[in-house]
Image (cartoon, rainbow, N blue to C red; front, side, top):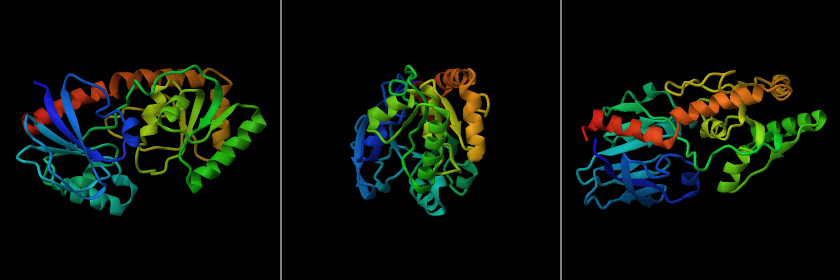
Length: 283
């Protein structure tokens, strides 16, 4: 299959793009130019000369004049709320192919366009293994629930004598910090979805310890093999102790790292995307 030339439409904030593996580094399957738009009410008229395909990411709401080119729309955040889902469905009506990250694909069967699973991809040039300088990290953006989690983890680590890394960082700092600890604790903000942090932690060769997350078709990750789970405060301390007093954290981290490198990097996902476009859009 020939490489496709793409116009990538995304919101005008580049911060999240730096942390996302999709369209992050050159791949043989695609070349692309970026069109940035305002989040709400945009009207996009991309230059389609020499363009095979238009790709549009989530978090933007407006109109795309396609000029006869097919449009692929990637939905990321639809599990956040019913309102968000309705907005995604409405935006998807412009698309010729709809791609779902980690929400349930059956939510979108009302659409007449083909709907396919295409999960988040890691940029392994940004998320990669580091030497471990801390026992435990908690690096989630603060919400009320996560602040409670921080207090809990901080108390456990102080009492147990485990070194603890926390805080908020800029993009590069966040990516580097994920790899500095043996165990990285995750608390889902949207519990019906699999966060990007799941794969990002695995790519740094750290062990993910998370509240239960949904099992997404195609992810092929399993608790106690690719990550560890906790259910409440007592279980969190028990799991941390079990991971850190043995080499269990390292065994899980290694299994997860090998899995993500084989199945969930941008270079792998680009091949999957190119095949889907061939199957669904005949390009």
